[in-house]
Length: 133
Image 1: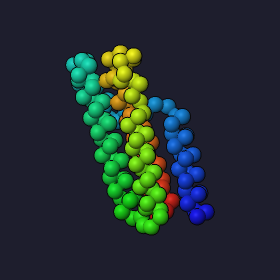
Image 2: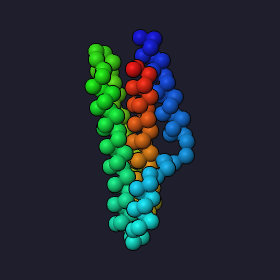
Image 3: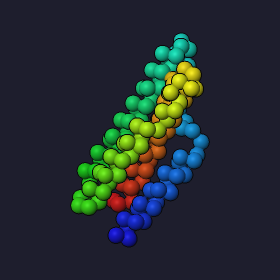
Image 4: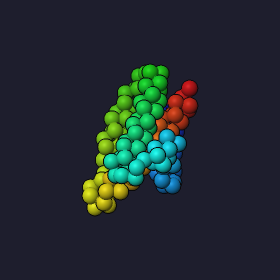
């Protein structure tokens, strides 16, 4: 139980630190896509969505690897946490895409924010995996 509390505390601290750090740094593919785009909002939106999709793939691969190695209460607790995190993720960053921030908010700020949230969770799951292995 003490180990689980330590892991949870470390994970929370890591998440807080990541969320208070600078915005997500785009990956090379995003930078290349943006540079090669025609500068239109649809092109920028595709670059951003592709970046979010890449982060989702990394997250899913990390989750599958971690989850496969768990058992018992830890497995059940982490699944509950991940389900809650998924709900959180879906609610994050939407203010960028609500129209108040203009089209650039939708096609630049939203994917940057969302990719950062997903990348932070991936890093958190990697830290959990490292701590329990």
